[in-house]
Length: 188
Length: 451
Image (tube, rainbow over all chains, first blue to last red; front, side):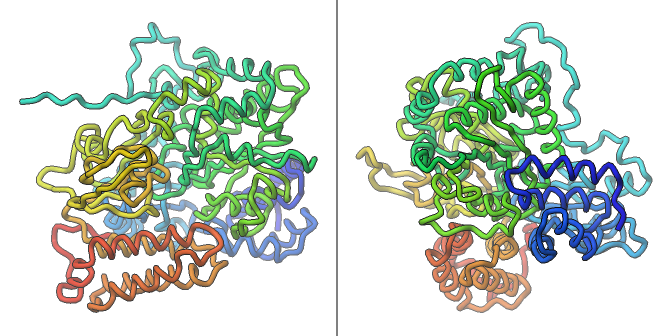
């Protein structure tokens, strides 16, 4: 197992933030998983040693939490919300459209390792459903037609530059201008 | 024609959130008078802040609706152990997306509220437990905390005084049970988030590292800032007695304009919310059912009527549309306002599939600690799945009900109830749909696939 110097530095800075070392476990697992894609037994042992724990103390977390992995997802990981509010707006069709376009079934990684799809539970953006996440980015109101469009943008490598379907978070201005009068505010 | 006044939003928590001239950077927050309440509060005695919060009557916004001031009162201050403050930002109740707005658009409001709360309870350290799917939210909070630290609003020697409180962002990893406060604490200790039994493990006495701990929802902690701004007394006049302040209602499902809307408690009814604020249902559809407070709350059938006496003695006779949106209204109708997630279902929805969808959620999210919940939620999922796959039997409604009844009240945490209530209420109110499934197993053409 090889971790970059940067990740190790981050981990070392993280541990003293907590009153007890063990508390840092989840955050360290996230950092290691971000770099390696998954936590194998070796990584488990390494983290356990770092926190003065037994490997099982880390293993039991990996096997419990849905977002922690023993095997990596694809290079691009797509999450589709399955839960009722999104389903009421067509998320099953969204997921099926993505499966067809990307050539991989939900819960699986495509043979070439490029894409994986996860049909997962509530992503807490129910008002803009169906919600799709590509890696760390959220895309809203993705019905099956838009899902096909999104998959095309993704496979042609244009999704990152495209502002289409982008969530509001990125629309925020960096340093906003002073507003003219307080009454000119729009309410929504 | 009588012109009806559409109820107007009153935005306190989300006052600035959607302003195009506003961002999540500290400059904007300071421009709008941010952190002045922190300065004001730090001139007061910590107990005085607690008194204001108690006077305000603010009830927890996470789901249970327990008065926040009372929760703070329960804090064990005599043990001499360090006190911890945790912000529950694990927003994961299906139908709820209010905390997302606050975290992404106005994170400094949360930090200010948290630092006032930390001072009031004299916390040694504070944590924000955020769900891992909010990748960007966690980064925004980290940046905001760094900004606040640089200006002395957080961390060591806040505002140059003696009080120090570090604030750490801790990410979960996709488990719904981490929203349960004792499960959250276990998770924050680096363990599996199996909830603890109460008594004795009330967080205010035996919380994080067995030390006194306060766990409050994002919206609740933001309210602390506004309570200090207007005073507990004035805050308690917003909304209705015992239902004070505003609430952010999240409407999802089959309405024209789903979204989040902040209103004074009790300012409007469920009907006004669906038809006036959210533009009503899609063309040609009619209302079939509403889940009023996140998927755990009991479902309401469109033609139900509720009558009885409220706590203050007034009699009521409501249709679903007449239920006032506050804490006590939905409670009087036999359900709850929970975390404020209103899920609307029109007449095209196959109720058995909707049930199957919800059951799949709870079966996936049960932590597995208590047998009735682990096994029961799994069986409820399997039965409803089989019903939707063409294998429905007439006796399934009773079978489901018997499983649900054996979960409720037999688990360590409230997840058992959260898993049982949907099934109990679906069967009570839509039994004919479940019985009919055996005769007509096919999904109607107009219905969406839900499982």
